[in-house]
Image (cartoon, rainbow, N blue to C red; front, top):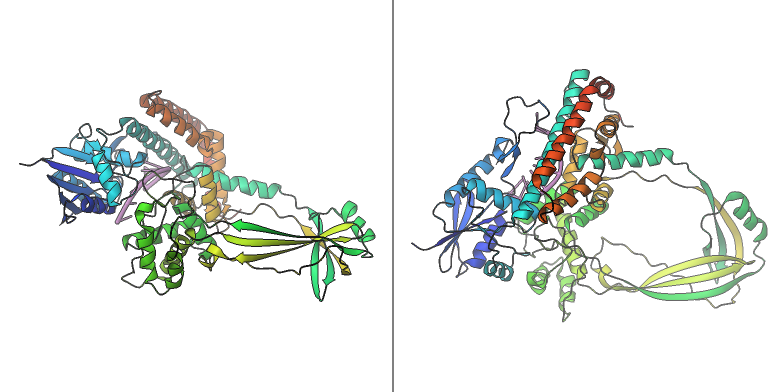
Length: 601
DNA sequence: GCAAGGTC
């Protein structure tokens, strides 16, 4: 009997692409079973390629009493034991388990990041019967045939156990904090309010909610200030212009009155005329976060909805894998081939044709990278069913952004007239495009207008009409919306590309936050206050920072998983004790906001 | 059910 290899991937698409790349004739056999489809490729020997569906195993506890806390005796089990609607996962595990029999070589080809490492490890250990120590690791960053073959020929001899250990520690700590604190809050709320209210918190939920609270505090503290803006109405040749005084923010008594009194328009002359060309670089390719933000800005589609739409477009093979943090488009995706496919679509024919005249295609990449995926790009395939409005909008956005990325920079010219009126300087600023470059390709998603002002000569006299003084008020910092909150989470490195939008949704579901311009509810505010009083680490981004450091230490062998878990449990024990000691106060606080209903602040 | 992290 020939040797037989089993390759495990993180998701179905990866299994398919690997099967087609590895089969000597490019025609692997596709098998359909209850647990999903898998592939058999033939090389010198047989290779079975079977996909997971992300994590198939997770941290769980088996106990009759679902409300008791604290709980520390967890273990890793199949996900279907804890999640409803996970029947698919049970079937998948059974399929992989069956396929793992009579296998000589195991290869973990899950995404080459920490989570991918855990997904592969748990499957090899629990579904395949302790095969994790025998398995090889296959790492690729795109699913092109070239990359796949290279990864297959350069297998790591073993899994990266240090990374796996660090990742598993992260899962367990999150579980310990999340389950215990959520249960404690829910239980105390129920006991004192008499009403069941599902309360929760965690390493990411806590700080995210706190961002909104802090913004709310800034807004409350904010004292609006009055200021004045002065413009001069003047006539150059036959046109009227408003020239802005060189200082944009004027204080009433000192500045504004001074000008009104002294600037009479007796001497009104052009002091300077300047022109300056500058470049506007094309945009960078979309990663998940930037696409979610752009979709919200342009279409008011929430990040959570956008992710759902992207998943649909991806499954319909219209776009590449959407859960990426990369701004890179490697040449191996085949730029020209994709643009040629887009060219066949009448909507993009003109734009695509123009780009194809370029001899060299070079995308304007950003700096962000992703260990497992390139940036988001269209495949150029035609939809085989009618797309819904929002799907169409998002796809069009992706196509136009992809095209724009290959375009030339735009050339703009800034024109500035400096006018001296009785020794006070005023400006008129103009702006125009000399070459639209990429902007033409990204329309209507980027709008830029020309404001043309006349060419004048220095020392030329102009006629003064009058001064206009406007009183204005400074605005408080704006509330977050789903997009700016996502950006904030990204900036603070809280959550992951895939989970951020979901976390925001969870805070909404818990009635901690409300509104499109997000504000914190009384309930959300009380939860934050309680956490601050009794478990301050859960409202700060520092817990994540700290965890990152400790994970690194595990990877470098400087710290032991057991120590970190022990410390975490000690801290949670202490926290739960102080929650119990102060149960009545906390209960009364929660009761107040729950019984009142969840009004906006 | 509760976390956060994958995936459909």
